[in-house]
Length: 148
Image 1 (cartoon, rainbow, N blue to C red):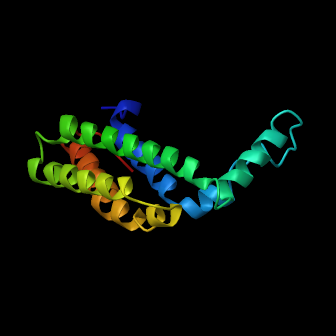
Image 2: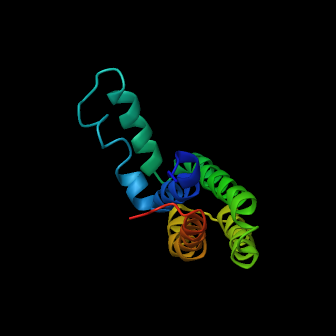
């Protein structure tokens, strides 16, 4: 049997979401990967202005709310996939991931800073990413998909 993109989506979404929890790196490295390094004359000034606002204590609140909603949306998608894909095979673990995910969403909603969100990264990793990975591996073993 072959592994498909659909099957690895929960893991990929966990990894992408975990990256969003690293708020310091998000703020510090915003668009530094390529866009600001190549000094694009059209995008560079606008992105530089956005990066300054993102890192300014005065204006970062508007970015914080958007950042929180992106994380919450991703967690909601992960919980939906866990519920639909893994509840049949491991109801206890899937139920715990869903419960922990809902609690984490609540904490994110009440976060007041990027630092508050960053402090939740270990919680996300241990209560969401690792169990989802275990559910994924277990599911693949039951499906007899060979994994490295």
